Image (tube, rainbow, N blue to C red; front, side):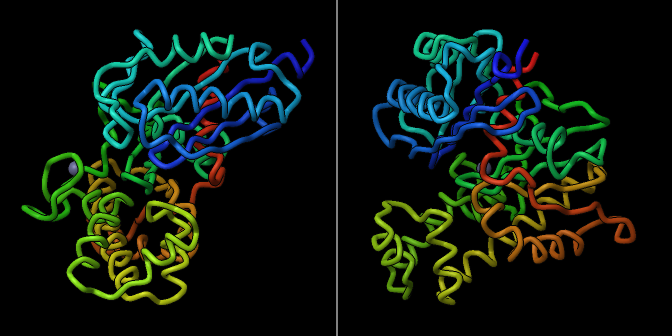
Length: 322
Ligand SMILES: [Zn+2]
């Protein structure tokens, strides 16, 4: 078969954006597209946006989607691989009941579709192609709208009974801030972009000064995206700096707890905020992690995800390899 016949598609479905790629036989990216995740219209609207976005990537690479040997999807929420459904994706519009994502995408795109957990496929992507290549056991931490975790132990994905890796919901402060999941004191309640935004709004409404919302409007956004946080940090906005420091503290504490339990060789920091702030705040997160390690003399290696913004989609495309 020619390399052209072996192209695959990958879709990374996030709370803020949908990223798609077309990859060749060696997982090299030959096309990519990105769109904002629809805020309304529920799963049907989101699935339609995913299909459009993949078509755009395919056309950029000179392909029809029906020519792809397969399409992999990394999705948040509860993924039922057998039924091809996704349920309980809390960060997405009206996506609570199981939705037949695999069949809908297959109908729309004309190629076989495989669905996996977004964070796990991104971790597998880093494990096979990115920063985690030299290791056998790694923890992927994806700092974005929420905070997700992916675990590879001795070369195998660790999924538990299906819900493993929820590092964002490790308790870093007993009885602490309310988390989007409903519990209190989770790492995500301090570090997730959505929770940080909610806290920024609360404090802003109470009269604390910040340019965060001005910057948001200036950029034509309706939420505090990672680029808005980045701008505010560079303007030394006090509220933004405070909230990012709080996030760093929660991330470091939570990651240390997970490392104390699993003793992985490396921690890989990814996700929208993780990629954007990896160079700037990664060392502070690593330092905070080291403070809470049990085995101070032997910390794991700490890397920013090497596949960058496309990592989730490239990892998803690996699902279509088999
Ligand atoms: Zn939680």
